[in-house]
Image 1: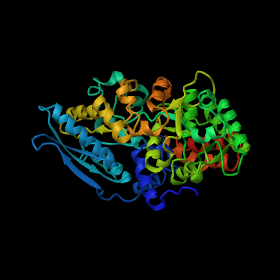
Image 2: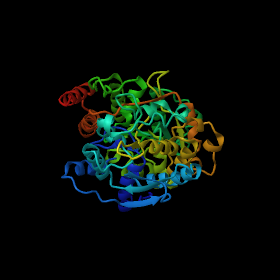
Image 3: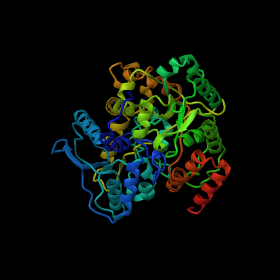
Image 4: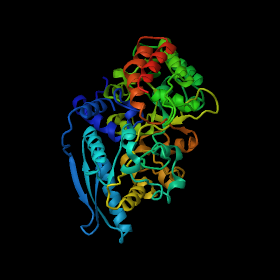
Length: 478
């Protein structure tokens, strides 16, 4: 009998977990690319943003710290984030008796919080001292960096040498200053169901030997031949509701369809063309299917994994939490490796998703707020708690090779997978690319996820024709 996920309960939990696990890249509408990653949640957020402004109602409020401390407010759209910050505030106050802080932590629904933040920044009143900003909202919040946000460069100086540069760069403003503190790298890796692969005669050594997408395709053909190519079993699935695969391709070629802050967007890239063409070929040859409901990071995608219908796929490391929360029966079956590349020597990963926490200029003591924020999200103490409590791949690279951290066998993520996730991160340390999230990003992402991917992967449309159509749509907005 096939295992069944708890449908109604999971549907509600998935929306919250996608926000907590960081990925706007996965949202088909209104998303700008990134992976603490949203589908239903992002659509609801977009609808909320289009409605008449209303007073946002918090879902949770708690105050931590002594009454004698400097009073601050902090907003987030994920209660687990505020719980983390509260724990770090207690540590901060223990270590800084002369710089005590009291923070009121408020959790709002995703759309409500970002709308409330932007309105308070625009009017110059009512903003919190600190606030989480999901990657997809970065262009909107960074629009007024000169007067809205406080730069973090000074506060993060004690930790900057150990932080992954490509992840910090994702939260820099157009002026080159650091305005957001990241939660995680969101490094994209390959997930492999070794139990099913081994049952088909494929060994760990063969998986480890995969270097290129050609190697990956050949292994997929071997797997399908071994299992007899049944109609409901595939080597992998491709998404029509998210751009993760395309981000991987762009990072491998060092390309970026947004053009960054200054150049015009160009989606007619070699990387994008090659990935879509390869995926079309996989679908035609039968080693891949289109992900149920268009995405591996949805309830139907989890069920597809549970049913053993796919045995490999690329996803950000924060997807580990999806296994823990929704696919616990898969414990001990899965193995993690770096992603294949198109050509030897290319980067093999990209950072997807994220929450960059900011300090606003409306804070009465922005320097103190920045010092606490960087301590919470960049110090070894903070990063250890992020890994332990949230399951994110932390940005402080000094911990990746620290056995007491990376090989802690009491950690639930280390227990779940067949290998240590941070061993893979250490291996790809210098191979993690970045795609910018800028003003044009929502336009690109929306058209790709509502039109282009369906045309190419569902309807078999010529890739060049589909990309020209996409380029025309993007050009109308820039």
